[in-house]
Image (cartoon, rainbow, N blue to C red; front, side, top):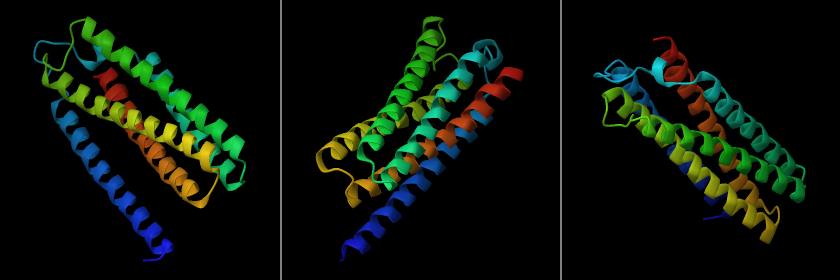
Length: 190
């Protein structure tokens, strides 16, 4: 098998992975929508969620998507230093988002709200937590890419991996937009 065929096969496999992730998130969203009013005697989303806080999370993650795009542009311009800098900025923004998400979970837990309290909270923690785990995976991937860039430079294999990472990161941002809308915005008005 030629290198070109192997690359196409890997890229196709990655798209299959993204589609399975899409199906998983679609299932988690459907579960959340079905269970969002099953609060038992617990609080509703309106009582729990701070939209200003979530808006800051959203802006940070969307900015990381922009810096991820700048990473790819820098790679296409064959500017290794700029590629690494933008990838670092993407990582830092991803870490900031993750820290805010974790602090939200910790605050909810300290207030006595856990996945055991109601079907609503169980589906909330599962959906948002799964997204957070994907962010963690993306951050590890980005760190590995920085190491590869430092060691080998902008060789074709690293550029391909950067593009696949970018697809993954943008996918997570799209999922977050749906979380922001369906979980937080709609939840704040119900």
